[in-house]
Image (cartoon, rainbow, N blue to C red; front, side):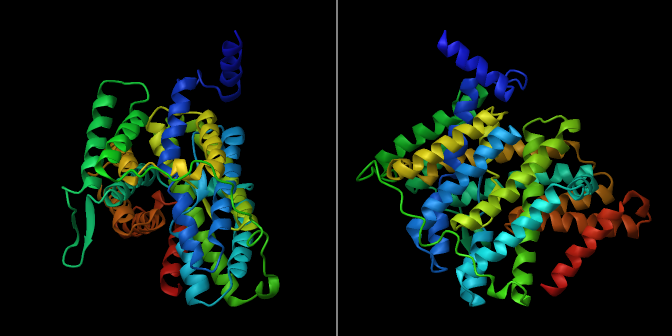
Length: 437
C-alpha cells in the first residue's frame, strides 16, 4: 500500500501519467542522463585547474552546483533536464580569461556573477519572450537537428570512432581498438533494445557495454568505493570587485552572457521539441528553465565553478522516455551520491556512454522532415544552422549562422516583411560580435 501511495504522490507532483510516462521510466531516464553527463565531474576540475583553482574543490563545486540547478529543474520547471557547468565556456574561463588575459580566477567568477544576474533579468522580463518568439519555426527545427548532429559527433569522437586528422580534418578511428568495439556494441544494443521496446533498454545497453569493457581492459575497478568530498573553502565566494568597471570585465561579462544565453536558448528549443512539449506550453517551460539556468550560473560563481547550462545530454534521458522532473530529481540524487561515491561512479567508461549520444543524434535529426528545403530562404539558413553546430563544435555558432543568413537571404530576395524587428536586431548583434570580438 505504501508503495502505491508513494507512486500516487510522485504522479501528482510531477504529472507523470499526464505526460504519458511512468515512475520506472523516469528513474531509468534519470540514470541514463546521469551516466552521460557524469564525465563533467572529471573534466571540469581538470580544465579549471589550469586557472589555478584547487582541483578537489572544483570537483565538489561542480557536483554541488549541478545538484542545486538540477533540483530546480525538477521541482520548479518539472522537466527531465540536467543542469551543470558548460563545456567550452569553462575553457574560455580558464585559458582565455586567466591564462591569456592574465586575470585571477576571482576576476572570472566576478564576471560570471554579473553575467548571471543580467541573464536572470532577461529571464524574468518579457525580453525572453521576444527572443524565443522571434526565432523562426524553421530555425527552431534546424536547431533540434543540429544539436542531434553535435551530440552524435561528441559520442563518435569520445569513443574514438572519429579522430582528428591534419590532412583531412577528421577521419575514422581505429575500429579494432577496445574502446571502438565497445562503442559499436553499445550502438547495436541500443538499436536492438529500442526496436524491441525493451523497458530501460538504453540504460541496460550502457551497463552491458561497461561490463564488456571490463573484459576488454577499458573498465577499471576502483581502489576504493567511498570517499569524502574535498572542501570548497579554497574557491567559494572568491570574488574580486576591484576591476568591476574595467574594459576587460565588460568584455568577459558580455562573452559569458552571449555564449551562455544562446546556448541555453538553442538547447531548450531542441529538448522541448524532443520531449514533445505542446507548442502552447513551450514558452512557459523555456521561461522557467532560463531562470534556472541563470540561477545555476550565479550559484556556480559562488561555489567556484564555471557558467551553467541545460545539458544537451539530457536528450539521452528523454530518448529513454523521461518526460518530467522526476527524471531530473533522479539525476540530482545521483550527483549527491557522486560526492561520496566518485570512485565507483567513474567506473563507467566513456565508450559505454558514447553510443547513447550517437543514437540520440538520430532521434533529434528526425525534425528535418518538417523543414521546407524547397524554399531557399528557409532551407539554406536551416542547413547552415544544422551543419555549423558540429563543424564549429558550438551550438551558439550554429544559431548565429542560421539567424544571420535567414535575415540576409530574406532581405536580398525581397521577403523582408517575413522578418521581425527582433530578428534584425539579433542579426546586427551577431555581425558586430564577429567584427569586434
